Length: 346
Image 1 (cartoon, rainbow, N blue to C red):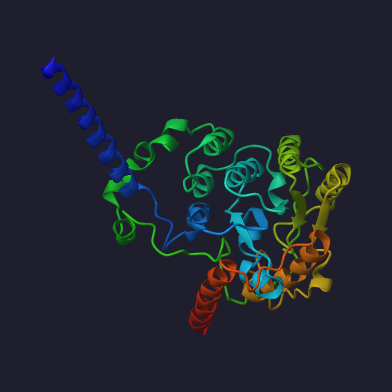
Image 2: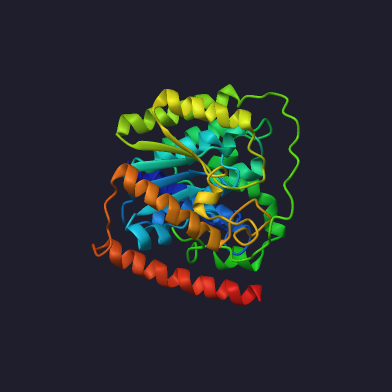
């Protein structure tokens, strides 16, 4: 009997050691997204938050490049976070939101509509940027299953070693530095700052649309997002950020307008509102009109913060603990980063 017990204990300990070793090796081999391709760091940074947020943004690079949570707090006392990632597909936005709602209930969710043009999974590389940093749970499982391309399989997400084993021959200093820790944040509550000024020199000529409507699959996911927000008593706001590329077709805009009207939602096409916002694509873009630099993001945040404040009566949290302490530290780091990036630009 004693020998049997010792055998069982030995097997259990061996399993624990094996699983621990598997986790450690997986952490070493997975991409770190800290010093290079930092967009991949965004999904995981959300879990460091210690305060709640009245506004959550979800969507692609047109949210994490174009809105400044620091400005929203400094100007209006609005607490916010951007759960954005590169080419974040609408079903990924849905599951990132579902994941966030397990721990907080914002008053407003803002969704950028550009990715509605994609009705099917697109790319493993972009999938990984969004999904690898999500915490494990039903939302991540759902996001993986909805996002996988034909060449992907679920097990490679569950056990990253299966996907990244070949990186053992090309490990970098970044891999070793962030093997056992994720390092300092690369964003400001999901916002990635850029200070370069690269003016838009010409308006792109858009390709001819094969189908003049947004895919029904993506609109179905948008309907699920609207239902989730309604169930939780959250106001869903649809936006199109003020980029000039990729091109936002009038037909797509009409589809979103019709959806918003039928669901009683606010929709802001900020391309059409550029003049009112004060965005100048000669000074406020970092890449010729695709994304805003920090100067444009601050302008857009001031304008949109006023909209959110007026339309949804958001509380001004300035002067309240722990919000004030949290944002004071963030604002200091924000200003330091702006100065550092400006010096690199010159």
